[in-house]
Image (cartoon, rainbow, N blue to C red; front, side, top):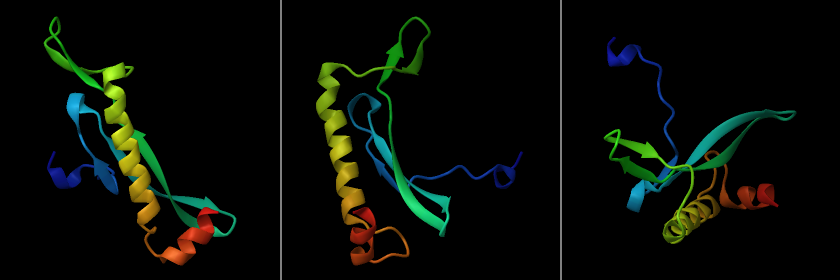
Length: 102
């Protein structure tokens, strides 16, 4: 099937990382329906730690983070916080954003 026939995969508004062990994150721009019409909001996903399974000879996602991973997780979250706090939503100006966030 040609690439143009495939469904378009959503793209994050902002990618963070990946850092050591594949840890990273993404900020997503979503449109939700409200009583006052559509509204744009953001969400955040944290990518899992990756490891190589010698037995299966495949890369896999871990279900948890190790204590040594926590500083990297904190960096990813801090970058996401900085981005959402300093980047107005499309179609709004900064003063409008501050009022909506309260």
